[in-house]
Length: 291
Image (tube, rainbow, N blue to C red):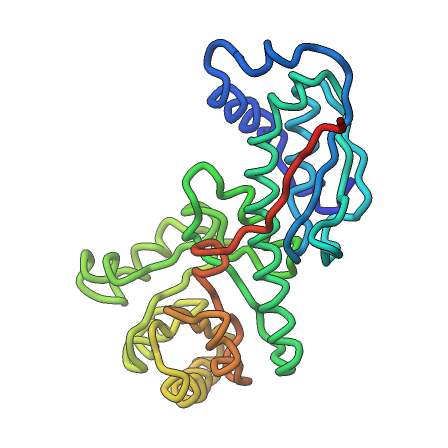
């Protein structure tokens, strides 16, 4: 079992139960065709990537009454030879293997895709000797957030905030609705306890200075060019130090795997990537019953 499996809430099993129910809302006609003879299916990986999503895959087949035997540890970099590599075997009644096949493959393909991109971004950061955090965002697929955030963890990226309840992030709409950054931070602090950080999305150095004066813990410099980011990070960091508080600086907004290195400078504490969970190429897996 993967070391990351201990992160998962007990409710993830119920989520998988719902996904299986979505796929078989009434009769399983294909299952009737193949019957209950015991079979073994082989899980193949056909494109290079980081294996992630093992506990979800296991739970799918636990619920359908099958067993899974893995040939790789979760987090391993899989490099197919001659077009494919054997990753695992699934044993059980033929109809029960096929009952879980598509749900399990969908989870594994997407989770591994997220983990693969996270691993590549972390490798870029390490090569650049960037000591900051490589993070995802809340731009996740509805209903699939747990899987995608889990993939970030396996790949070595920070998940960032999990949801609206885990950190206050004040974006342009919050600021426009309250009239100013100062008003928004004041309102947030009135209900957010000492353990909850407040982050403010800033479009300029002036916004960042106001956020720091208002008491923000994290300043997001949003949609800056790499050149603008480098200058602003120095000035904003100096402003934070002058305030007597340690203010973190996050770079965000349109940063991709291709441009990431340009933003990795010593003044930046966090770089967040919406592309960690959006437009991620899946890792190609297939499950084939022996014949």
